[in-house]
Amino acid sequence: MDELILGFIGAGNMNSAILNGVLSQGLVAPGQVWLSNRSEGKLASFQERGVHTTTDNRRVAEQAGVIVLGVKPQMFGDVLPGLGGVTAGRCVVSIAAGVSTAYLREMLPGAHVVRAMPNTPLMVGVGATAVAEAPDVPPALFQTVLKRFSAAGEVAVIPEGQMDDIINVNGSSPAWFFRMAEVMVQRAVSVGIDAGTALRLTAKTMEGCAKLLQESGKTPGELRRQVCSPGGTTLASLSAFDELNYEGLMLAAMSRCTQRSRELGR
Image (cartoon, rainbow, N blue to C red; front, side):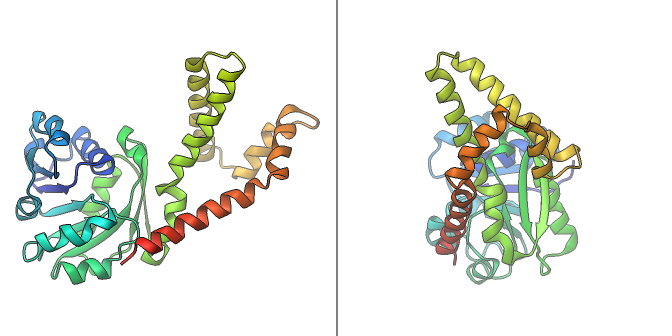
């Protein structure tokens, strides 16, 4: 455990997930953390754990050496001006889609800016976070940021120019898996299968597939083909994917995701 003071502006799902990760891993003590949010309701549980809480974003910025901006891109125009003159020499980590480090450096002169794209599975310690290369940030400080995200899952460092596209891989994609699980459970229930049983088996199947992807050394295509037997049920089901152009659907979804990130960009 080190003496670095961490600050979190916004107590939404992502910032809460990151904060829970660093606290559960013992990387910082609760007393070394400051958290702000517009409403006090989301602050109560963290305050009970010993985290300093406030509704004043500027106070967080004044206290912390690393500040995680966990607000939506549409709110940056309201939030950033209130931090002016405070963040110089401090590290500001943005987890907002589309917002470039150039814009943040312009709005927060002198700040060491890092751009990251985490995902909601950080809430259970198995998240996946993409972090943009930050050559202007001191290496030791950049490693400190990576260590914080690593506390709640996997971290990959990529060129900033890929950030609008990586959101398809880890940022928005959990919703696609949840949508698939939702349909699978709904269909099972419609034919009389217990909802709890269907959800448990669906979730465990997804967990097992993820483990195979990580540990088998095989490509997704190879693993898919291992499930298929000639003339069997799996090939019959996959024929519907082909007939309804599943690949085209996925590519369209990914394209729209990237486009929206760029629209939100500054």
